[in-house]
Length: 171
Image 1 (tube, rainbow, N blue to C red):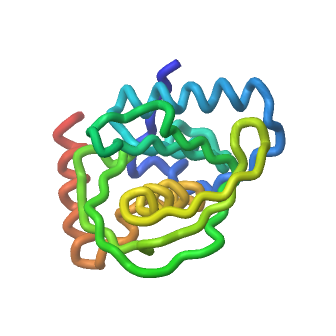
Image 2: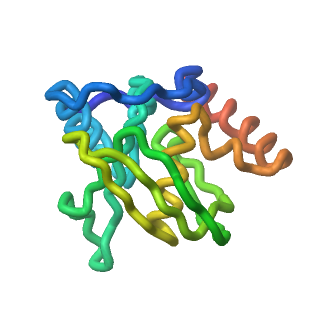
């Protein structure tokens, strides 16, 4: 089922998510819904809080070398924790909760993440480049942050002004 993605400045996006305690059919349904919602919105990642569920759940489905988003590459991460990060890279990011806005963000180039899959089995992934960016972006959501908070003061002021005008023009 496709769910509604909440958008900035919805206060729920500032909620710090809680750990998942039960790995059950309800969790599986939520993960399936998150996948359908993300694909329907042409996204490559989605955190549960973006559909108003404050749980430490995120999914990432990167696009492969052939420009295909293959469901076999889908990562479903429950209660993820970054255990290592190093290096630095700048990547142009966008967000389903801030539609139509893209900006260069500096993040770690190489990370290691520990998480659980939908069956409660512990996993570890080591990644860099775009996948590392996607992980860090989605994990920020779990902490109650949105990527625009990484902008410089001047860029943030410009964004806020443009965003308010965009919202006003939609009403």
